[in-house]
Image 1 (cartoon, chains in turn purple, blue):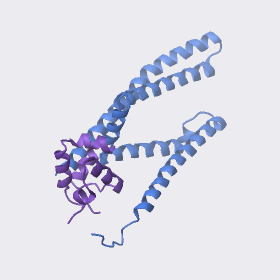
Image 2: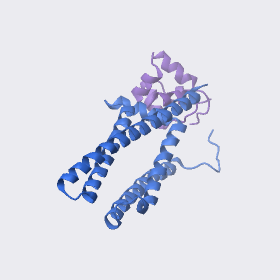
Image 3: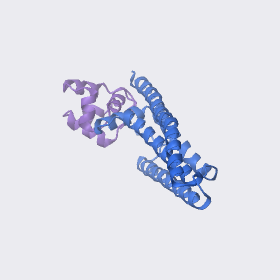
Image 4: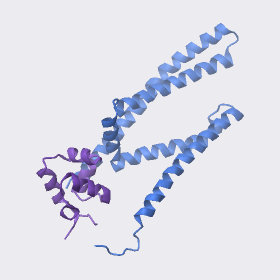
Length: 68
Length: 167
């Protein structure tokens, strides 16, 4: 999994669930900065964190993290 | 996407290596502390005897602090700490400064009482005099030093985070 560009899909999914970066961060047990950095593509999250985010946002890994 | 890169390192190996480095750091700190205690007992309490140990502990701590500020993770550390603790990290830092000043004042007071006084009454007098003077000097110094360095580091860290989060 290579996440080197902005993750718009994550941001959209988060907004769909009416969650702020801080809310999502709290739900998956990281800091707001970490979510922010994933969204701008400056942090490559571990598979565990990706899965936690997907489960919280009811999405699959493909939907949020797979780059076509 | 999964291009073979010569410089690519196995992340499992890297993580375990980092874990070892962390343990190594703790080990070095323990060895230095033990060395300081042994030297104090064997050679007397003097900073000259333990300068190397003191430098290792001091420089590595400062290095960690500066790096956390310049990488921006100090902001994360503060956020995690403050959400889990009733006392804010800023307050804790100042309290540590006060505690350090207090311990030093007691130490200097006892040192004067035991080494320079000729009678019990004089020992009490020396203790309280030196204790109070040291208290006035060291408590504001350490509380101010720790408080201000924390504020400066936090400000830098917040700036780095802000810059990183910009699109």
